[in-house]
Every structure is written in structure tokens, then in C-alpha cells.
Length: 152
Image (cartoon, rainbow, N blue to C red; front, side, top):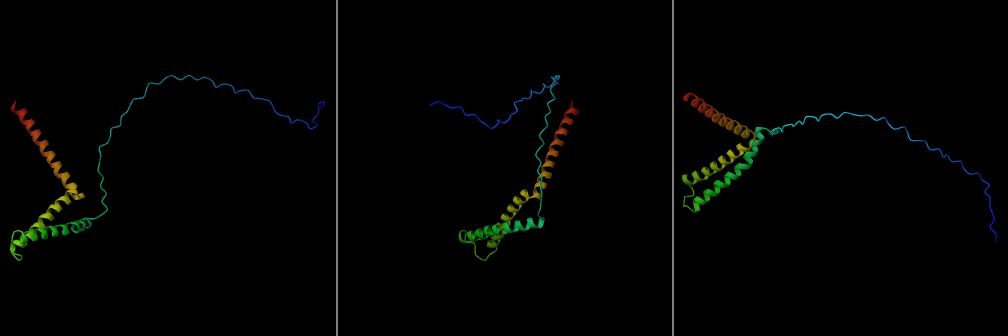
């Protein structure tokens, strides 16, 4: 069998084959080298404590009482029982009451000192006391230096 040639009757679509040339290159711009910028070091600021107190003195005092009175009462009561049972102190006597209230007062005082050292008021007090200490040492050193200069 002989191959037959078949012709297409539909026209071919026209395609654009135009390719635009590359845009002209940008002009060459020469820059002069600048000297390096000065290296600036920003010093680190010292740490500053910022206290934002949203409670009042009354709230702190109530909290201290709520936490401390049961602790001091139990310590006083345990000391009272220990004195009565172990030391033979009479149950109803001045010595037993003295032990009870003495231990209560001692525990309460220790808790108060601890609380005052850590509360915002206590921090300010410690800051003032330590600042006075620093001033005292500085004044002593200054006076010693002046005295050495006068003795020459």
C-alpha cells in the first residue's frame, strides 16, 4: 500500500515570533570609598529596681498578722507544753505564762524583722542605713587622708 498525502484545509494560527532586545545597560556609576564610621559603644545602664506597690500598708499589715500570729502562737504553745511536761513547771504559774508569752513575742519579733527586711518599707530602710554606712566610711577615709597631709 502506498502512503497517501493528506492536506490540511484549516489555516495555521499566526504566532508572534518577535523577541525584543535587552534594554540598554545602566550607566556605570563609580563611588568613592567612605572612611569607616566611628564605632560607638553605648554603655550598659546599671540595673534599677522599680517597685510598683499596688497594695496599702494596711493590706501588708493584715497579711503579716495572718501569717505570723498562728506561727508565734503555736511556737509559744509548744514551748509551754515542753516546759510543763519536760521541765516540771506548774501548769498555772507565772513561769509557764512567761514561757508561753516570751516565746510568742520572740517568734513574732523575729518574723517582724524578717518581714521588714523584705517589704518595700524595709528595703528603703536598708538602703538609707547602708548609705549612711557608706558616707561614714567615706568621711573617715577623707579625714585620715587630710590628717596625713597635715602631718607631713
